[in-house]
Length: 485
Image 1 (cartoon, rainbow, N blue to C red):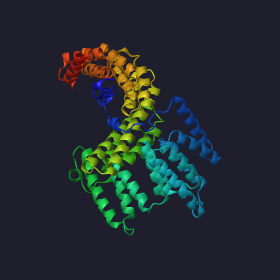
Image 2 (image 1 turned 60 degrees about the vertical axis):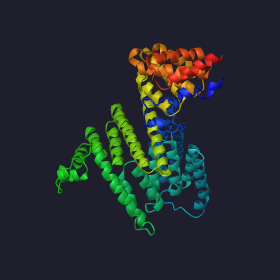
Image 3 (image 1 turned 135 degrees about the horizontal axis):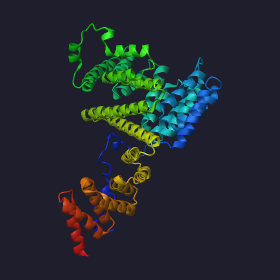
Image 4 (image 1 turned 90 degrees about the vertical axis):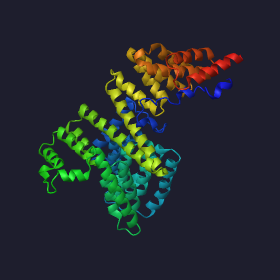
């Protein structure tokens, strides 16, 4: 192409694709295995899971194999993982481990770490499962698998692996260190403090533990004040008598209500709210899981929980962003990336489930397509956007989104066609989107050396907003190209 190629590369117009209306998911690393499971895959895994549950007390080996298929098929599903770990624990109950088994598994653990380090987390999970089949209490393997789960964006699974490691060796310093970091990154400061308290008397750890406990107590105070709308612990203490009884404590009162009638759902949801405000997110999540079970897996309760989990995931990203702003260390950057990835995966999973649950409602498919686009899964996004195009009310905006996706996968003519459809379809009420479509079309056409088309779209844009981005400079460049030909 011509000399203007550097400034008008067809990729130029897509560099900011998805920046508008972006969520924390939009900044998550792409290519992270975030594609949602298809409905047949979900059903197949659920059937395997049911077979595993049915054989749990009859044929534990068969049950384990079924659960393994589930974990490998959907490594982010914490229910599958917990069932597998429970089955392995049952099989190995009372057995002592060590000796040659520990020596042989050392090579396997190294393989898990290497696979994770080389960007193959799913292979690392598979290799780790082979080790756990022989020793589910191998805490070093569980730590390595937690790292692989983090790389996959399987945040809940990461927590389950860490918990299993802590259950296996509750006094291990490195296990407690990793669990404390995970808990703190997720706003569970009490749990993080408990991890350091557990090991603070171990030789060589005391100073580090005391330092971390002090820091976490400060973080907890700040976090509690933020969630309470600025009412910090001091104000709260002044408002409540020090000798408040359990009956006056709303958390205790709600727990009592639930104990008296375990079938009630609303008190559990209220309890989860209070626990969230107290920064006890793990307890809040367990309470929500109990609420779902009490409701008989009611869809509305499930969606209520999904909305909260997405909100919590965003909150964790905000906390990590604040930490990174204060200390731009590699460790904090890594944590931030992992939490963004987890938030992205949570949103993709939720909107994929809703799109399947309500196939006639294109709004959910649109939301799913936007999340897939935001995490760089452009081909998947195109497929879902094209379903949304059946709704004529969304045609212009969706055509613009599809154009940006096609541009990212270097299907430039298809991208230009969709931009022009967007220009023709978007109304005056959608002026900003129409300007974006004109700009994308003009820049892409310039890169393709279709200068007449480029001048048409950029001139139209200049006619409505001459100050839009660098449209004036681009038109000057096009004029100089025309003069030289």
